[in-house]
Amino acid sequence: MDFENLVIIGSGCAGLTAAIYGARANLRPLVIEGDQPGGQLTMTSYVENFPGFSEGINGFELMDNMRNQGEGFGARFLSVIVERINLKTKELFFNNGQNVVAKAIIIATGAAPRMLNIPGEREFFGGKGVSTCATCDGTFYKNKEVVVIGGGDSACEEAQFLTRFCSKVYIIHRRDQFRASKIMADRVLANPKIEVLWNTIPIEICGDKKVTHICLRTENRERELPCSGIFLAIGHIPNTKIFGGQMELDLEGYIMTQGAHTSIPGIFVAGDCCDCHYRQAITAAGMGAAAAISAERYLS
Ligand code: NAP
Image (cartoon, rainbow, N blue to C red; front, side, top):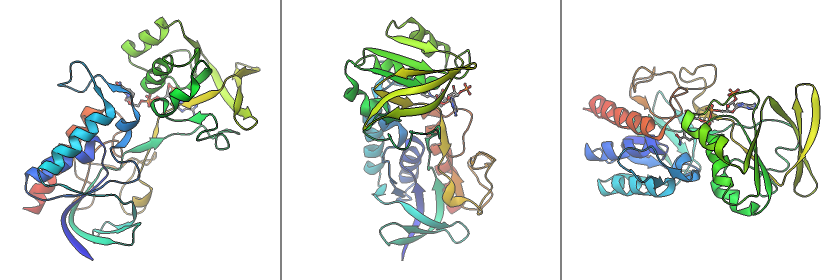
């Protein structure tokens, strides 16, 4: 068993910012990278609203820069997944058989894409037509008609991005107005390649080896819309399952916080796993900094 000052679980914006601050406080934090090193921003196209990058920056590049910055100050990275954790004793068990005891832990596990849970969704997921990442999979749909589901910023961003490749992009939204910010919604509405189907609910994804169409319900009418790809952009679920029963979570599974503190001494939290309100790269980064400062004060 290894002993550590500070273990940071997660390597998205929150985790890596905590790593930079923790390393600069000379804590030599150990960052557990998890199954998606760099977090959700590595799946996005361009980040236009991170302060300091007036021309925007590629999401992957931004995260790579943050990782290098942390490493430069002495943060260490372990490419494993936490399989089990005891928050009271601060013992972590990884999927490579290794385990570690920490003096303090920062939880920055982020969130995972929400699924519709309709027939056909799992069957056609991953290479067969259903995706949660336009940046990763958009290029497979050159000159094809695709569907984006959702009405938030992600749906608008994904739809905009897909118009680079696809002949037509439908946005299927269950209400009659977007949840997305006005600037994103206006861009979508002005794009001639995008058609929005309002008040429409997906009920089944159909195909043979790959997706051929989606069944939709608008008011009481059902119809089939031919399409080759379906991109889900209906929000996220916090990655907090392994903490269940050990700490306070809200009804949706977000960790309950008091600032960067949790209900357990020495356990701190940052980013999308505890934030259902803002969920921005910059707010996650800010929370990561706050968590590292709190951890440093706790340790000293
Ligand atoms: P979101 O804002 O929660 O929007 C999710 C959308 O999916 C909503 O329109 C919701 O409908 C719809 N939805 C949820 N469950 C559904 C279901 N079961 N069936 C059909 N539709 C469903 O999520 P998001 O778009 O991923 O954005 C998350 C956060 O990240 C936001 O704070 C957003 O501002 C931010 N973000 C920012 C940028 C950017 O600034 N560049 C880009 C992406 C995301 P209702 O509207 O009816 O609830």
